[in-house]
Length: 49
Image 1 (cartoon, rainbow, N blue to C red):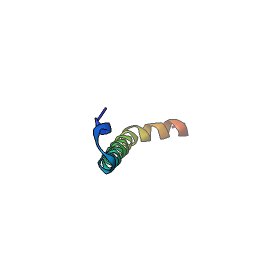
Image 2 (image 1 turned 180 degrees about the vertical axis):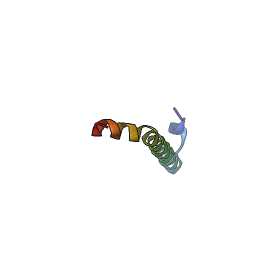
Image 3 (image 1 turned 90 degrees about the vertical axis):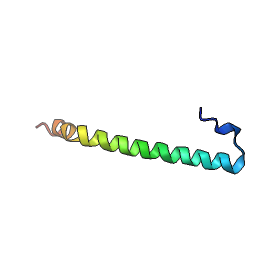
């Protein structure tokens, strides 16, 4: 998908670590935004308010 299979040893490992870190940051920001938008509504529904 990213073409990292064409890289060699250490370069491939570094690229894979970088991709995983970027993915983790995107998920962290995305879930944080989703929680701030939907979180209070879900809590109100669960509490029966």
